[in-house]
Length: 285
Ligand code: PDD
Image (cartoon, rainbow, N blue to C red):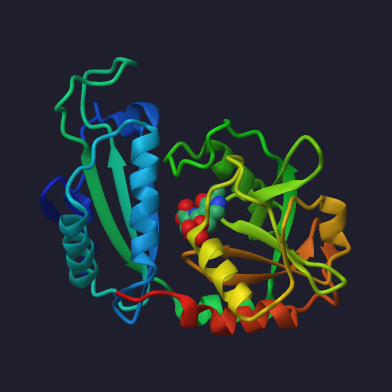
């Protein structure tokens, strides 16, 4: 079965789908995106993802390509046409098409909208969660607006490749003070020796992760000890547990940081329990 992409009003096989060479996304990474989990054919936390998409568009002064209601229909139709039951749906909006020039295109230039969907190998992700993943740390050399979910992801790509080259799944980005900001494509968390869950606060220097926000609701509802504060790499080395969160993998235990074991190099009990409970707090639509 060929994969189907929605591009500016049409559903096309990926081989025939494309945007103009003059698209602002291609020329300048002048675009934003969202990745939303699909479970049992339903969207997970769609409302929060759509609110974050609106925030990204507003901060970059970009027009919406269509209403929230229409986009909801296109996302579901893309999921349906790709027969995705468990996976992700990807939404990308760019500032449209214009002969290459830095200033914005004239008012009224239609934004480009691309929606794709793909099936995830749940068994593989589950096996990964049972084993836990390794992360490495690299300097966070991204621009200052990483709270916007922009498609400008080159530093993240380079960090992720460095991780892969070193046999790790994820890279943790580290600020000038030696504190972890977030993963290249995930939110970073630790559980201290005292059993306190810690993740960095939202202060413009990390992406406001949707999985992060839902998990905080869950952690509070369960009455777990939780602190929103930056943590250092040293603190992470000494942590009882570590894990990352993102839409595509929910909660993924981290068992190794820079080659050093976290705890006894096995997924922690807190991370595993939160992974089990996560979807009880998530919204399915
Ligand atoms: N990545 N931080 C960064 C830099 C991310 O790219 C992501 C998500 C997250 C977690 O956000 P959320 O919980 O909303 O998925 C944090 C997505 C999955 C991606 O780029 O594929």
